[in-house]
Structures are given as C-alpha cells and as structure tokens.
Image (cartoon, rainbow, N blue to C red; front, side, top):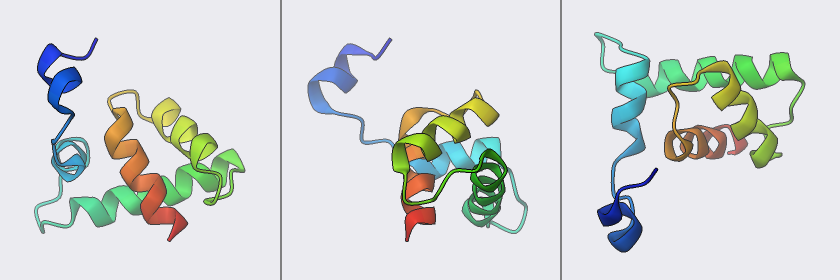
Length: 80
C-alpha cells in the first residue's frame, strides 16, 4: 500500500536507485545492465517494446522486487 505522503505529494523517488539495488554493478552502469536484462525478458516473453503495458507486466513477473515506477522507466527506455 502506498504511503500517505506518496499519495498526497506523488512519488519523487528516482527509479534508477531501485534498479541499482536490484542490478548492482561495480562499474556504475546498473541501469545499462537492467536495460539489457529487460530487453532479454521482453524478447523471451514475445512482447514488442512498443507495447508498454505488456512489457511492464513481463518485467515485473520476471523480477518480483521491481516496483511499478522502475518497470515503467525500463519499458520507456526500451521503447526508445
């Protein structure tokens, strides 16, 4: 459940922080690593990158720790 502050003021958290926690990388390219993972996941699922809703669903199904905002961020990155 979303906290009251997030509901009232919106979620201003940077999705790249969560991606860095889930896809740690010593070189500082966690987002690049996450993007490569996401590209493989949606390809394996047979989802087009342009279908953002299905891409988000596939990403979150493949990685349960991934919340909505970072999943949307990755889907947008893949869409171009």
